[in-house]
Image 1 (cartoon, rainbow, N blue to C red):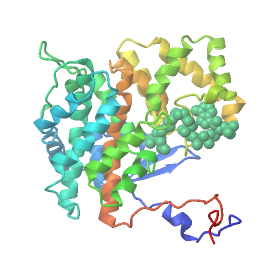
Image 2 (image 1 turned 180 degrees about the vertical axis):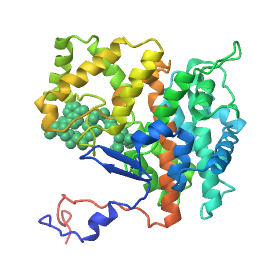
Image 3 (image 1 turned 135 degrees about the vertical axis):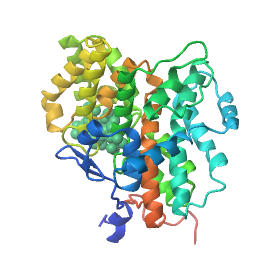
Length: 392
Ligand code: SDX
């Protein structure tokens, strides 16, 4: 009861949804995808198998995996006319701005002949989006640096193909670095899905109106871009660069800025809407960061040292302890991506590539189960009714 109005008990029900895909226990730092802990998936699975699991509910057997992998590979190319959309952007446009624009155009190329009331056509939509997002992402990078687009290859797996489209060029042979490919696949897996986060909720709300899946995913990309959400990984690198070195006073200065809320500053890559304990993805990401930088001969990377020292100081500080603020998935991911040669303006684009699997799995679940149009309610805090001046 708000004093003016009372709200029907249905208020909460319109603000939540049911799903079988991902479970998060924020108090204990647990993340399950279709019941499997993220730590075990990161160790034993790969992004393509995880995509099948999120979409279909079970780990694929060898035959199903082979068919799914082949189907994804065969849909990685995009319509040649999509190249024209890139030419409308300035070369120095942020790759997320380009991806938002180009992904929205997919509706004009891939939806017309699909009937999303049919399970088969929903599967086709999902595979097309999972397959084409890495191609569009790599095209955003190539356009940004002025190099020619690289066509995908069907003989490479998901992460290898993405790195190939990002870094190969017509002038020399490109060799896949297995360390980089494994790290890229791990990053794709750790970002694949995360229950009803802001961008997934955006996709579900758009999908509840009957909008086509390509348009819904482009809405999710826009929501992900914000620095409070998927844009944090890029902001972490900016913060580590601004800290400059791992000296105690330098790092403490930033921790104090966050504690004093100086110009609303927050430690990027810290805190979470749901986790009040370690984000389990952050733990795996930190281990992967150590492994990859060691294997690439960058174990003494200065930004990694700053990140570790910052984490240590913050986790010992009452301000962070009292508010249960821990590193989240974005805290270490940027250091790995930078070590793979990926510029920070591409970090959120890569998050979007990975999350496309989660977005389209939630969209598919919602459409399959049937849903009413989403209609979040509000707590009205405005005037009660009043008459316009002079009204008789
Ligand atoms: C992602 O939802 C998802 O699952 C998202 C995601 C996914 O996979 O989809 O996990 C991905 O978005 C991870 C989060 C990435 N964002 C950042 O790292 C940006 C920095 N983090 C914060 O902006 C913040 O922690 C949020 C937005 C992530 C969560 O905000 P909350 O839960 O709404 O917390 P809050 O704003 O209510 O803050 C509670 C208190 C406040 O202080 P008091 O008012 O109690 O004094 O904690 C403080 C905040 O000022 N606080 C921080 C802080 N985060 C919260 N203080 C310093 N640094 C921070 N990072």
